[in-house]
Length: 197
Image 1 (tube, rainbow, N blue to C red):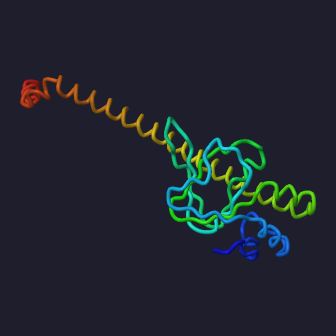
Image 2: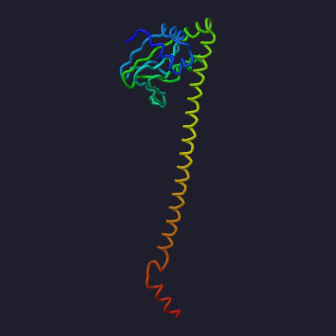
Image 3: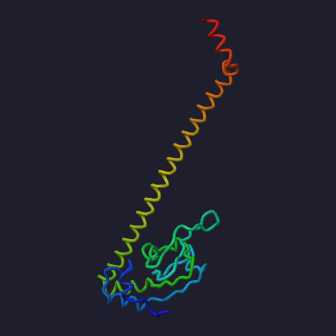
């Protein structure tokens, strides 16, 4: 495995999009390679945070603790970056990230970004803008998922209500049919017609 990521590959990633090759070279020299086997945990929900990551190979699961168990919330694929939320809000990790298959990630310490802020403000601004764009995309996806969930719930309620109403109608018709003399004796209707003729 290379001791640093390919600067050209970094330039094509969402985190470093728009940066010059020279700027990507500087970032590449200060990134650490993390290799993960299936089931390995990169970080846990609640951990203190000091770095973000770019996934180079494999797949990672994003998990959230719920009712005493870990629920898989999503999946990260090669080229995606993550761990950036704590860089923005300075809070502990909000999710657990673990490998669902063999994976390789490049780790970038937040301290590197702070150094870039002091030395090359334009470069720092581009990276922060890239983080903000990705956060916006994630929020849009979450909003769409919420809308779909809400619509599904409403459709389910309507279908359940319609089924209940249909069942009530069938039940009433069935009760009337059972309770009517004509239904219990099909010849009674013919006799009453004959008597009236």
